Length: 276
Image (cartoon, rainbow, N blue to C red; front, side, top):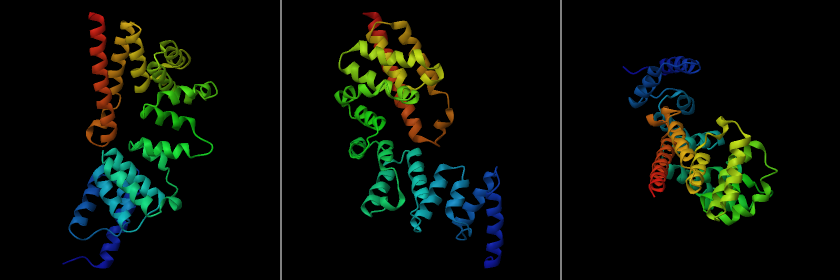
């Protein structure tokens, strides 16, 4: 016999109370999923169940259903974009943004379309958004120019560097260094890399962009032992959080795999230069 409506309410209220606990037994979510697939979904909003799921895929399942039921609020859309991005479902996230744009939803939910265009690799669209803003955000412009390889535009913004905050200097110095490398100005490239190296603690220099650009500079300057040390540091950086490789964050795992390939290629370039 199927449960009465009153039984469903009582059971759902019990599960909802458990979902508010700080540490939730994964079997509770498994039970909710089993009941849902049996055709007796819990009388609990899907976004609340999604927030408690340990599985990214299951969380996405419940959140998508919540969205399709007509919940177009900012928080739900942000979470959908984040989950799709983490799982490497880039086209799905792009489709969601495009759908919202076609239906005129952006004005009411205040989604940062520039940031999400960046996250999803749509750099031309992001640049178009940032260039139309007043005042313009130099950090965002530099990021877009770098991804689109518009090195001359980065060099033109070099006058803004001295007035940047400490955090922005750490973030942007590699872009200026890379731009001047393409301009064949190794002296200026070294200037920007040394600012990060000399002024800021080691822990703040452990980012992939800095290691990549500095290693290129070191090889080009025939500083092979330092370049080798940088490459080794890069491989150590890849393993600082092994959890990203368990499928919970496919996007970050993909970025690390690309960086690993860059390190391998840099090591090959280093060996080639040393043997010549």
